[in-house]
Image (cartoon, rainbow, N blue to C red):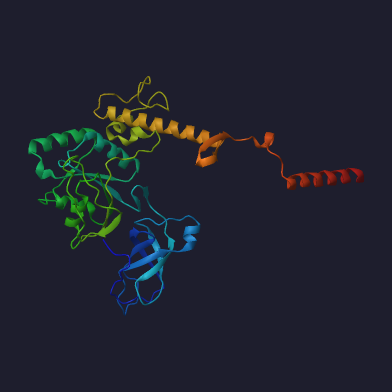
Length: 369
């Protein structure tokens, strides 16, 4: 965590333009880590700048996201403040959490405390797969699970199409394999509340003390601890983004592409094609996707949810196009049908004068002929 009003006790750079990476956003301030090899060779370069966004970027609707590669200029040569001038093109972009230029997603789930729920895990997996960013599935608190139960979960997840990493932030089990996976990559750490994301950050990054919280005693759910996205540099190279946890993954995708976000079903689609191009793989004839896989009921539930939301959005769109909101007495809201412009709307005085002018000019041309 950091204080947006604090400054760094470093000598200022004399280079007017620098490139850097946005590592945190708080209110309207952006903390930017400067690239190496930029700055005066005879002085120490400032590692971080506290920046604002140029008004020009705001006017064109260019938002700054954590992970953005930006061009910055220093405000003055007395402190570590600057302004973001431009944003370099993004490789990837996520809306929730708002992170740009990530190389992979590390989806962290706990085996115990809180209890692992297959339905919740399945939703998070579908959400992660829909981003089209490479996914690494990782399970924490493996020390609370018996060896036989670990084996059963491995076999179950293998049928889902995943080979997860098993770690423990308490015993440091599996950390070497995890570190190799994170090396020299920009990783988004995501997962539900209570998975141990902040605890994992504290173990991976030295001298970082992220606030952690215990699992709720009554609900047995994770408490929200992380409030905003922040990047940390790993000792072995690479970046990792600590993100706020959430217990329900929102799913907004094309219903016809949903089947591709289930690896076990995607493998079936590679064996052939369905009879219909718009097949939803429910009960259509000659559908190549069978129903004999565990998460098929998860697929049907998510599909029904997406189709329902699409229908609701369509109704709202139609309603907004045909109705207008009127505020009556005492603030009462009501909708009234919009009038058809060509049939009921009166033409403005300016339009009428223009039409008369055109008619007059046409008559003059006819007289000349």
